[in-house]
Image 1 (tube, one colour):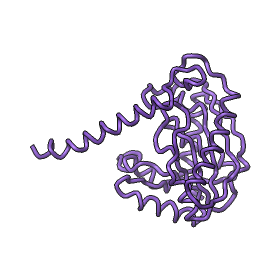
Image 2: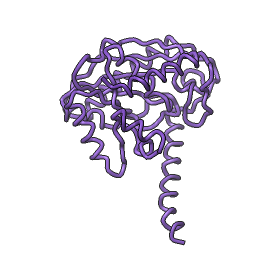
Image 3: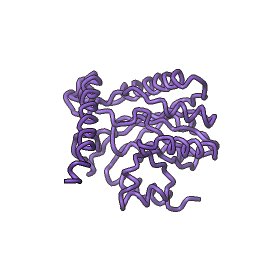
Image 4: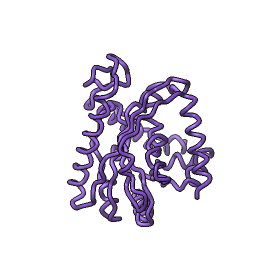
Length: 253
């Protein structure tokens, strides 16, 4: 029993209802009723994790999401994240978060991971990091692919929040579990292929008005292409690195 996690989910569902969000979930039967598994989720918006946990509730399970350390450092979100037993990711000490995730998996937990690492501004699947595959191999647990479509309409990078009553449809598909196997690069490629197929299926049954910011360029929207989005991400990374490099000098003056 996890009363705090259950209460948070209840609050979230009340908020979803107030927003008029319309969920379509398929493949819930692929979430194991017991035992550890890596839950690999695509990343198109800031609230993906709140939607990705819905399929697991069919078997009354909770997901421990890996999230950047800054969320845990926040005085409001930090205590909540720690109480829900989510896993902080400190990029300066990545081995610690990897080990914590593997330990949770071995204890039979579901651990949520974003293989893309960052939000995809193109809303296409970015290249995947190998962490999800390496964790699954290390803990000897399956990877469960989960794809969400429509979440970017609610709140995503570079666009205003739309947290009012928007009646936004959000589709969630849970794919067939993928057994762990070496090498990690091949397992990562298999995961990417599985999630690509799930995403294409969800998009095929979803209405995409031409020119909308949340619609991929490939489908007639105004979102950047994957290549353009990658260049934007690279520019952001360079700017952040420059700010970090400048900070000590500013502080010592």
